[in-house]
Every structure is written in structure tokens, then in C-alpha cells.
Amino acid sequence: MQTLESRRLLSSTPFHGTPFLANQTIEAEDFDTGGEGVSFHDTTPTDQGAGGSAYRKTAVDIQTGGSNGYDIGYTAAGEWLTFSVNIKQAGNYQLQARVANTSTGAAIHANFAGVNKTGTMNIPNTGGWQSYQTVTSNTFSLSAGAQVMKVTLDKATTAKAVGNFDWFKIIPAPVINSKLTWTTMAQAPEGLAEAQSATLNGKMYVFGGYNITSPEFTGTNHAYVYDPAANLWAHIANLPQALTHTGVASDGRYIYIAGGYVTNLTTKQQTFASSNVWRYDPQTNAYSPFVPLPAPRGAGAMVYLNGELHYFGGVDLNRDGQTEHWILDLDDADPEWTAATPMPFTRNHLAAVVLNDRIYAIGGQEGIDDKMPDPDVLMYWDPSNPNQWAHVADLPAGRSHMAAISTGSHIIVMAGEASGGVIISSTLEYDPIANTWTPITSMPGPRLAPIANYINGKIVFALGYSVQGLQKTTWISNAIV
Image (cartoon, rainbow, N blue to C red):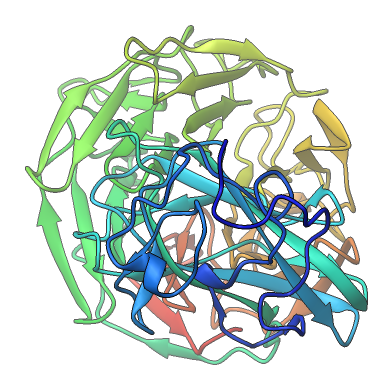
């Protein structure tokens, strides 16, 4: 490739002469000097940017735009840039990227000392090539000293572009605020337990659950959305079935509802597993059948990670525990669930979250006796031990029927059921770097099978069951990081 920068430069050097520091804005166009294959890789031989050559002679596609008059555009998967940085103090950090795109599906990551530290950073549809949003990576550790950050453009959208890039910034990772305060918000329209929820566009979507417990537990097909900014609950379209114990996850565009216990609203009888998967479109407020699970499951867990849905654990139609783990690639034109590494033991009524590109399966129970929860915590997809479920620090005690959220740096587990069937209010925080669980401020009251989501730096916690019956409560925490 013929470049405009000198090919004689065989090593990266800082563009401005000195490395960038933490908390300093790193303009994307200020990548290191060094030339093709040294400080950058570009798939086109000339600068395609409009006006970028006025700033810097290079094959990288610099164009007019961005916050300081220039940005990098015309990007393609496989391209990369390096930036010399100097980390004054060893510690935990995150990478921010100011990005723009007109569709979803693109992704990047950053290496330090040749190690992928950030994990996948997904590029959203920002609504325009000069409509920028800031995306933030998972938390990672950095040693002190001079080092090179290599930003790699991993994946483009169907339109072939990874996105436009304005700037990057390495920031200290937020420290968890363990002293939580809870504010009581508007009540939900009805009390529910064993509902499931997902966050999308700053709102919490809630599907199904038990709305009757006596004379027998009866599921509902009701669904709701809660807007914490407006403190408003609203009905959305009813589910096609009355469901509890589903797996629910969002890819940022749709919400997927998989498996679950199905209640026949005529006979009030429950079927304890289903293979049905529904896709909810919030733009049309409608559901459509999606790729069914390979076998009926209920009380399992589902998460979204890097373009894929993962469903694992749960019970079958006979309420026998299962270990299967299935993956569905949503980018596939004709997706099918495929078998992945099974869990090492059965679990149902567990919690599951994604943190640092890893899946955590938390607690739950092995059989159908709710009074015998387990403390085990498993992690899936550790790059140093791929395709395996690895044990990490156990919960301090067995717990099931809990709510859990990921802040991007920590995991918070709230309420649930302890050994002996005791409904609890205690709250725990998991630090993935220290691999420790620490008690933090408890919930205002005990809850069994509640829901919780992390929205705009706060926990939104709602619903569940207590000894007083089904609850409509909504609590929102103070900012926790």
C-alpha cells in the first residue's frame, strides 16, 4: 500500500511528541506516527476524507467533522490505529469512544501490550454520521508506565462501515458506592412475581409473571414498560401466552422472551417448560414468533453477548434440571440455536448477567425445592480458558429467586430466597478483579422473585413477593458509581 507518511518509520511515536494521559481526550486523528503496518492499518491506499489532508498527510481517512474540526471516517473491519499513552498510576480503567453510525452491528476493541483489555465495544446507531455518542468499555486493569493502545475495528455493519470516530479517552473506572439509598417511586399497575425484564432505550420492559397466588399460582400475559425519567408505568401489548420463569434479553433493538412456564388461562394449569421464543418490537408494540429453543425449558437464564443470545440451565417439562447451553447468532441470516459447553451442574431460578464480555451464572437451585438454594457462581468465556464454565467466588450463602444487575464494573445481587425458604433483603456487590463478594446496603424490604435493571447509573428494582403477598413496589437507588 502506498502511504503518504514515511515508510521509513519502523516504530510508533506519539503524534504530538508526548504520550496521552488518562482523562485526556485522544483525538482519533492524532494516532501515532509510524506508517502503514506500524501505527495504523488502512485498507485503502489514499485518504478518502474530505479535507483531512489539510490536517495530516496520511492514508488514514481523516475528514472534516467531529468536535475539533476533524474525525476519522470511511472505516472498514480489520483496520487499526495505535496511540502512545502513559498511565501514571496502576489501577482499573475504562475506555470511552466518541462514535457515529447510521446502523447497528459494528464493534471495536482496544489492546494494551498486545492484550485485549476492553472486550467488545458495540457501536450504536446514532442517527447520523456526525451525530456522535459516547460508548464506554468494560472495566480493565492497567499497569503504570508508557504503553501503546491499539484500537482495532472488528466488525462493520451491513453497509460495510464500522463508524466515524471523533475521540477516545482512558478514564479511571468508577468506584462502587456501597452506601445505597432507595427512593419509593410510582407503583406498578399490579403485583407480580417471577416476571422478567430487560432494559431498552432507558426504559424497563416487564413481561408476564404470577399475578395470582391463591387459591393457586396463575401466570399472566400482561406486559408493561416503566420509564424512570417520567416515573410512569404503562401497559404494552399483551404477550401471546401467559408466561412466568422466562429468559429475557435485549440486543438493543428488540427484546427476546424464551421458554418459561405457560399458564392455560382457561384451566389455570401450568406447563413447566416451553420451547417458544417471542421477539418484541417496541417500535411497533408487537410480538412475532422467533427461532424456538431446541427443547422446552423453564426457569433458565438468557443473556445477550456480542450479537448472540445464550440460553442455559432451567428445567424440562418434568421439572428435571438441565445443563444444556445454547447459542443463537442473531447476525446469521437464518439463525439456529447451536449447542455450546453445558453447565457443570443443573441450575434453575438462577440470576445471569454479562460483565467484561463474560457471562456470570449466579446461585439458583439444583432441584425443585425452593428451600435449598446454592451459592455457586460460574463464569463463561474467559479468554484464558475459552468455551468453559469456570468457578469464581461463591456467594456467601445459597440464594435463588434474586435480582441481579451489571454496572459495567461490578455485579449487584439483590433480595431473593435463602436456605429454608426465607425471603431476604440483603444486597451483595461482586468485584471481578478482586473476585470477592461484599455486603452493601440492603433493600428496604425482603422480596422473592423481583426484577431489577441498571438504567443511567441507578438501579431500578420492582415487584416480587413477600410474606404480605405480591408487591407493586418500585424503588430506585441513588447513583451507585
